[in-house]
Length: 303
Image (cartoon, rainbow, N blue to C red; front, top):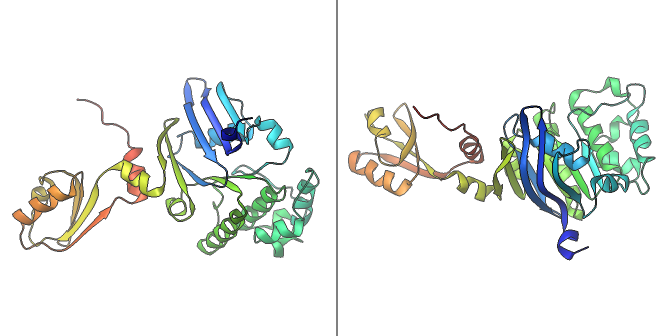
């Protein structure tokens, strides 16, 4: 096995998956290095969950190849190299939380101690409670403990903080991030863009079954292009602001203008020329949410 292959946690090559007439994943190539924390983003139907299912071996690709630590997925799963926390994962109602995690631990050769997995997941106080008595956020923490107990090298999380309140979400990410200090690789899909911005080393944005952007948060923002100019512009007609050069979108509220611009220098010069009384000017790079919306926007149809 080459040194390049062993340096990769996940390697996807020419990966495709169709469901009838719908192409869910359209020939993606993707490498995830060991130790990376990677956020997988995209609108509904972008292909995120299908990609995750193929990485986990839950769905067979129509074409292409998946390798996890240089091995076929089924082998990596058998060896306990992958831990997964899925949206659709269910817990056994008749078992306590501790019994559930112990059951999963018994299926692996070298599991993490159950007490440690529960503690890492913030579920230690739930050990004696039956699964059917858990709230949505508590159930998510238990699913996290189940994913951790095999002590995997790769942790795959699909919408891990769904149903969690803000405080529980914060505690979850604190626990997860501490767990990656040992070099564990993490791939997580989320609809909470602030989670990707705060915790991911790298962001992969999918749209229409393809990769629309791949890089650090700063690089993905840059891929969307443009900046936002905010300024107080007394008595400026909205149509005059929209007409400024390089402006791609504008909004005015109580005399405060917000202009999206493809060339902020050109727009700002024109703004100050046309409205010399403009003040309190701020220029900011596009946020991750703006980049997400820009890069996943449907192209306008020609008229």
